[in-house]
Length: 291
Image 1 (cartoon, one colour):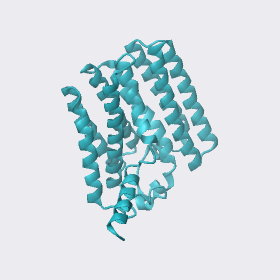
Image 2: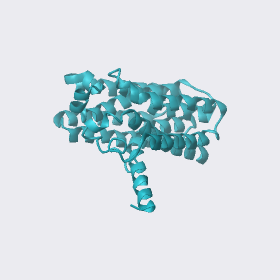
Image 3: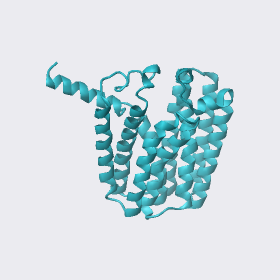
Image 4: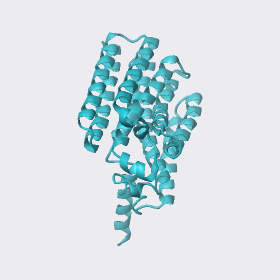
């Protein structure tokens, strides 16, 4: 194989490593970040902040995927869904993945340097959360909670990026995202539950067991309550609360659909519903300020 063909093959592997064709994960990180960004800025954060946080979300989600695959490189070959990942099947080496991780992190940090000093300081916590999350599944049944912290840290940074500090509404959005992530990632974990039990990987899907559906309902209700409290702290109007209520109804219908179709395909569809509903809620946040 000539050098050109090898380069193309490696670039394709890097694309798979950072999930470039599968940007639903980026959207799940982006939604709470933008809920916070638009609320903190009273409806329009400006082009500069919007570009920084959208690009930063893409870069850090991609870096998080790399960190996850490095940590899981000895587990992924034993899970049907992940056995063809680049580190699992040998297309990339760990040193290749580390280079990609540090390159992505450096680019994201370059964006953060355009923000205020407090937000720059917060960015180091975000990197730490992204690195620690993949390790949690070895020792705890709550990796989905840590995923929520990692995915929701953008909401904290967005609020700080606009205001230079923190406020109850921004922190409530962060906590709400922990529940949001716990719900959709529990659904995602249901796809791997048989393989995870065999290899000893822990998850909330395993923890909840036969009570997973009532647990998901409770998680979504708490998430909605926290977002309602965030709205009250910010002084949001009726359009926001109407959107929040509609979102909760749709989340509960998603759980109902999963209960009726408790297959891997059903779990994936339920997971993907969260991408759409999270984006819809952002639309209601924006509309509440615009109308």
